[in-house]
Every structure is written in structure tokens, then in C-alpha cells.
Length: 578
Image 1 (cartoon, rainbow, N blue to C red):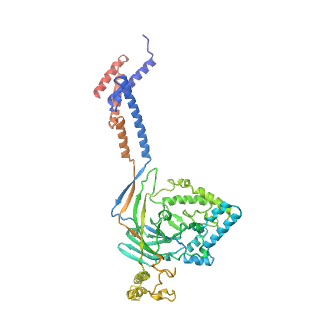
Image 2: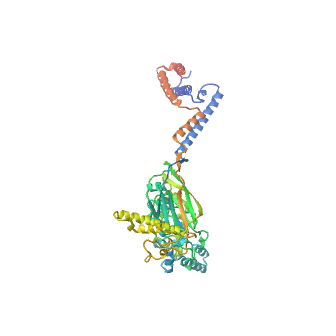
Image 3: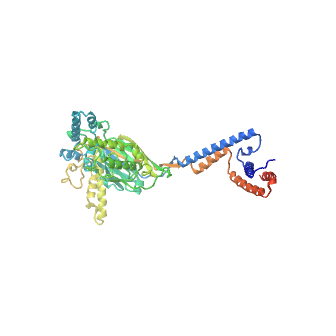
């Protein structure tokens, strides 16, 4: 009989110990299929081995995919209606489709500001020059730059502001707060409200009406504005321009409802208000609560930003446009008119559409080529999610406008203004002159004129007089300084009403699609479907380790001659305990 080398004997002992441990684990575990691998016909053991291996692979791959899905932090929006949960009253921005004021015509006539007609003639001369130079492509491009937006870019910010409408275009305003109606002739004095003016490349001067603070926003339920349309359109030589804008020219107003303190997106959310009509805007407040996740972070507070001289609250979209604008200013040397303008344009860094008074065609073409590259979506994507993050909480307002005829008359508008001014003057008099008789105040005399009037349709003739000759207790006839031919029954006015439909709020809250509880539940389901792993497997592993140590101690105390007997005895002991 050949002798067995110690090395071969050691390998045989190792294999025997591994097989014994495997059989021991198969006997002790409840994992589906493992109990069939150590006994029975070879064919069936192979079938069960294939089943166990394949199910283990399916389980591992599925668990890895589930964990990756969990780490993606996908969210879903949970929508619910919150009854009697009032939201802050929104801001209302009003812009005129015809943006030029009476003052603009005077400035054009005095040649103090570039007029649209003069700009049109300048553009036609440039087109003609390029045609004579056989440059058809340049002539075609320049001829279609005769638009209001390009004209705006060839004005200084001060000139653009001077050409547009000012606060006097709003003839009267009313606010309902805590069941109390507040009227004002000068809307800048409306209690609890702020009026801000900003510059826009399509509408020149727009005006935003917004609550002064959170308390005023929650108490307000109704806001109405009486808006003049300003001067009628003219075909004078100074206004013969803007042919490419013919399909965008409209009468009336452009209004948008938005969150107070933010810059209004007129192109995306703007509504048209018809002149000569009552335009009622109803809105549904929607409160968004985003989930702050590692893949889609958000924040609650952010720094404000500037657009020319205005300061606005942060929004995600405006942040992207602002950083895009900074790249345009740095690389192209100009301001893109549709993005926030962090500073005022200058002659060194003008608007990208600047062509007046001397056009350097090569520099202009290079500027537009650079601008075209910077307007690529990839520029904004560099900052999205890294520098510019969405806010965790904000409001949107789903708005709809309804229009009907307005039955107002000039005398109604006039006496409403008389009452408004009389009330304010009387209140000021009583606050500053507590010991004097109220009949000594100017407000009392104005109020008395209204209260004693027999025929309210008869407006005092003194109302048409100039300021130097008109009595102090008679106010100027409405809209006289804007256009003498306008009356309240024509298209010279628009009545805008912003109304809270109800005290309810739609709440949209983001929630994780795959939470930790759902992840554990799905992994448990996969384990049960594939190989039947349960939480008891943890105890089974502890049990296996215990019996494995017990088996090694028993084996070490025996001699080599009775190793097989010791293993069989150990197996019987384990089987008995299992």
C-alpha cells in the first residue's frame, strides 16, 4: 500500500472540512434549494444547483438595480386641496401694447430722442447701401431688424423710460382688505401696496402692483385698476416703423399674475386685457414644496438680483438667465435684452442689437455670432443644479381672464375720484389738526360739493380749467392730460380686476417614489420570490457558526485514525440539534 504524503493528506482534510461545513449549512438553513444539494440523485442535485445559482444571480442583479433606483431619489408630486388655507395675494403686472406716451411725441418733435420713424429711415439707408454693395444677405438681415425690440436697444435706459407711460396712466385703484374697500386716485398712495416700474424691451414701461408685506398679502382679496390706454396710435412720420412687428401689434394691455417680488414672465404667463371692457382675472394659487435630495437639491433663501435699477427675488429660471447674461457680457461685450441686466448698458458694452448712430458691420456680425453661441442650451445647463438651484417652496398662480362690457360713465369716474381725495384729505387734516373744526379742511369742501350735488352727471366746468385757475376743491377732469378725445365709453379705458376665487390652496408636495421602507419591502419580496431568504437567515448563520466551532473543537480532540468516525458523530449531533 502506497504511503500518502503529508501535503496530499492536508488537502484531503481541507476538502473534507469544507464539505462537512457545506452539508452542515445546508441542513441548518431554510434557504430554498440548498437542502437538496447534499443528498439525492446526482441529476436532481444538478437541477437544484442550477436553480439556486440562477436565482441568486437574479436576486443580486435585482437588488443592485433597486439600490441604484433608490439613490436616484426620483420624486412624484402629491396633489391635494387645502380648504380654508389662504395664500398670499399675488402681484399684478400691467403693460401697454402701445407703449408710447404723449411725452414721447413731444420729445420726438423736439429731436431730443431718436424716433421710430428716424430709426426706420436709418435702417432703410443701411439696407440700400448693402444692396449697392451686392451684399444681399446683409441687406436682408438688416431690413428685418426694424422692430420695437431693436429700437429699444438703440435708446439709453433714461430715454426708454422717458418715452413710456408713468404712474399717471392708472386713473384709480381699489383694494379690498379684511372686508374693507380702500380707494385711491393716486395708486402710489394705496395703503398696503407698492407700485414699481420696470423697463421692458417690448412695452417700455411696465408697472407691478404688489402687497407691501406678508400681512397685507394675506388680508387682500380684491384689487381693481382703472387704466387709461394712453394716446391713440398715430401714423405721423415719427411713428412710421416696425413693419416686422405687424403680427404682434395688439390693442389693450398685457397683464400677468405672479409671485410678489419676482420678475414677471410676460412671454410665458401674460394675458391680454381688452380695452373698453371689464377684464376680471381669477386665479388658483398653487403652493409647491420641493424635496431637497442629493441629486436635486433646493434651498429656502437666496440672494436677490438686479435688472437695471430694479431688485427682484430669486427664481431658478432668472438665475440661469443671469449667468448666461454674464457670459454674454464677458465674451461678446454686449447685453442680451431678454435676460436680466445686472448693470446699465454703456457705449463700451451696449445692447447686442445696438446699431445707431454708426454701425460697424463687422463688429456687429461678430457680436451676433458670439451671441448665437451663448444662447445655446448648453450654457444654461452648466449652471443648472450646480449654481442655480430651485427654491424649496414657492407659489404659482393659474390664471384665467373673463371679459365683459363695462358700463362706466365719465361722471361716475369723476365723482369717485372726488370721494377718494376728499376722504384722504379729511383724514390727514384730523391727524395733524386735532383741535380744529373739520369744516375748515379742503377735503370737507370737496366732499360737500359731491354730497350737495343734485345732478351728478353734471361735471363742474371748472374741472376743465388749468391748475393755476381751477379752484382747489375741484379736481381735474379724468384723463384730460392724456387725451382730450377719450371718454369712458370708448376704448380709452380698461378696467382690470384681480380677484381671489376662494380661500382654498392647491398644495403640490414632492415625495420620494422609492423610500427606504419601500426599498426594504421590495428587497424582501425579491428574496421571497427567488430563494426564500427571510430574516431568520441571520439566526441560521449564527447557528451555523456556533456548530462549526463546536465541530472543530470535537475534531481536534480525536486522533487521525478515527477522523471519519468523529465527523460522522459530529454530523449526527448536528442533525439532532437542527
